[in-house]
Image (cartoon, rainbow, N blue to C red; front, side, top):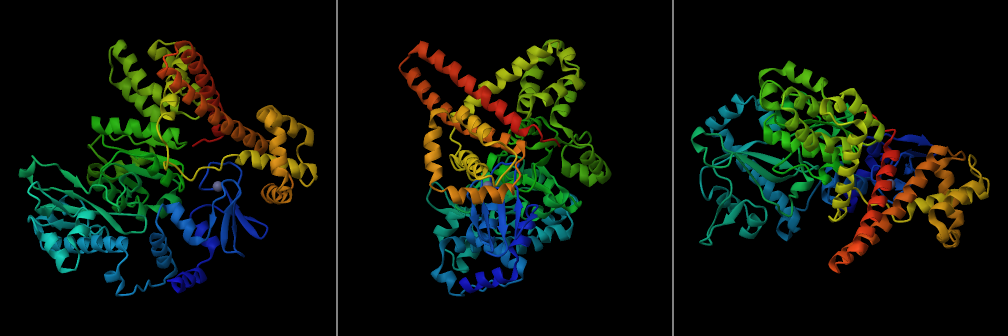
Length: 578
Ligand SMILES: [Zn+2]
């Protein structure tokens, strides 16, 4: 295996590989960029062609091309190996006996791949299913490229065929291809369905979505999706992502649709930047996968009421993850697939006319001509949360005045603002009670902004960086960290020369005020988050002990901290404009 790895490394240039995912800028011998793994405005992510590696001074993430692709695309090592081998034109030569000795996961991937081939073969023999797909608008080329297949109307077809190919019952169960009934006897999960394989970022099949297509089967679910397995983590897989990666980078935005057919029709029509959630609502891990490629998102959900509810939720999540979000307004036809099939130009126009979600939702509401009372309650329900999710106060004000929201609702602007703040405070507090592990990119190391600021302080003391005075920097640091300043100073002084080197590398001798301000905001954010965590624990304790006075006091404190945190977040995001 290691010879293959070296062969791939020898053929691929790390600057080219990383540069195909993010924009790199030359910096001396090295290249730098804004880190794709943590939020920052000032680049501290470095790629060194000499050492064939990357390193981020901000969050400490580092490695080679394999670990970069792994982390960027959310793959395992074998997945990144597959992606890079293809890119380098290196054939992966697996030991033919490996299947028997077998790494379990590799065998499961193979099982899914062979199932896909079996379904493809079944489809070729079923003219009715093929006719259905063609009627829906799919070309033979699309059917082949996306490996669409058919599961026979039999109880033990795939089970039998996989058995002949040497797979065990345990493995078929683990992949969700068969299941056990009440009697303990197993049977095929997918029967009489058109099969859409769901791929991971390395183009490996990890799950299926099966669709019925005959009229007389209206009593069974239209779509049946694989359950969660060790290969298929619903919340992390976006349908079509393996083909959309380059399109998203090239076009600078992603189109998010709901269903397989929508996705396939988009790609067939040349919109190869489309992805779909498969059998689940949009999640934060989905968003963080997309975020690394682009912060611009266009939502094209179904135009029915379920689709609208789903898209409202998705918008709020995307807005609060700092995406610039627009929506498509589809008036004719119910979903994107229909529209593309019947009127490709109308679809093209809809994408071009995508508007900010807040505008779309508000205009929709206006068009409904509701009685005033109902209008206002819908406004509170649907528009206020979107306004609250906007990245800055000035943007909120802009939307309110642009759409004359105060006049339309009869609520004065300052009261509207109050309601918006009330909403976000309530919801910020709510979200702290949920565990957030593994939801985003790797966490920034605790104490990192402090480390960076002390690195700058040391460099300023040695006058190798200009742009700020030693005294004012010290003063600002003391204001924020308080008595802890001396301890920090002592602690960081131990690695003084290394820190100076880092600071010089990042800032190159001249420091901009904006960069310093951002670091101070990050530092304050860190400290406030820790404070909030402690206060929330105290609050829970006080609630259990029914100490009402303390509860009220702590609640007020928490709200104060939360408010300051959202102010900081807004300040950091102030420049972000679509
Ligand atoms: Zn980083």
